[in-house]
Length: 119
Image 1 (tube, one colour):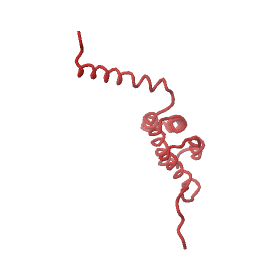
Image 2 (cartoon, one colour):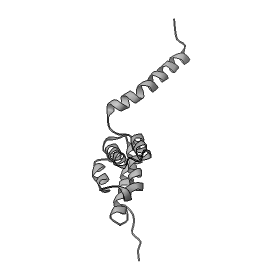
Image 3 (tube, rainbow, N blue to C red):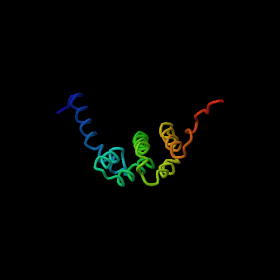
Image 4 (cartoon, helix red, strand yellow):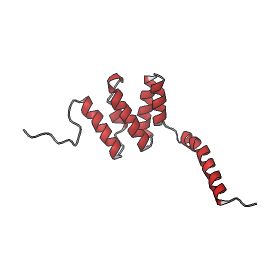
């Protein structure tokens, strides 16, 4: 009994989608969804911890989203500069850009890389 190509692709896609959450859970670390769920549940300490974990070990897209969440909520977070230490080893340009934005706002100066105006 042979499966058609279309049916074989459907089975492969179904297995992949079924195993994706298990692989993500086995990899450990927080994701942007964890940050969002904790924030929606008004659990700010859990959202903060998930964002830090996401920036430390998460995928680049999740890390950028978590850093953006941190940027928007920095006024209500304890130790808002802790994100800079968490993301210090990351080299993704998008994440570095958001971290420079956070650093600039916390230290009340233009973000790194911004040209200052001539007088």
